[in-house]
Length: 337
Image (spheres, rainbow, N blue to C red):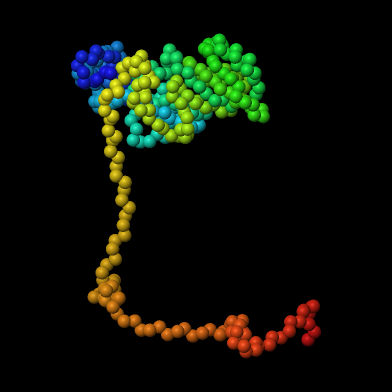
């Protein structure tokens, strides 16, 4: 694989080099260049049509481009209610804000909308992310769908040759009915293009209203038993085998992993100051002297016989006859005087 320190490495486009450093995608890098944020060897560049070599010094907003680390890929179980973006203009929670802080800057391979859950691939290599999300890659993306309505297997088989909806052409789709549950139906849906809202648009064309959409696999990578909100890294050897020579071209599996930035130590909880040896208001009398000071013996507290019930109970225990109480006479109105 390529090595950033290899002087024989051929020059590459500036946006591609920035993407491989894990700072942004190639499109974002091109936008940075157009905004005048990128310099090469101290000179500001205005066009992404520039090839750079391993000896060129690239800086973003004055900060040098970080050393390229090993190509890494992560499996993330996206929950519902998160947006697949680094910053949302509407202030909605994003998947990247929910990731652990000890991970490098990651880029998503494609996107899942707000209400869709399941597997999404994250990588630190922007060029690899771009290759994996292209339809030409041919990776199958499999979903489980719960929809409201009725559909026959014959209708789903008709999607194998593609369908045109609203002027948009959707390619071959593999779909099957898993089971029916009341007024709902569970389907398995597999596509290779991944156009915006493709699954929902196609099923709406068949008269189905999607209630739940879960992506269970992306190419050779499967969601499995990964819990919602959890992330798991693919081992380098397994990643290289699954990508193959064509998709792994340009990846660097020999570079070191970038060290995690040190985090601030946790704040120590304030401790109470030690009590003074000399008690306030009594100079010269410390705790030790007070502990050795003899204390007078306590006299037993006098027994309380004020309560009649307690006294009567004691008399009964001692065998003495209890005080005779006046019999109760019911009151039926005002007494005559």
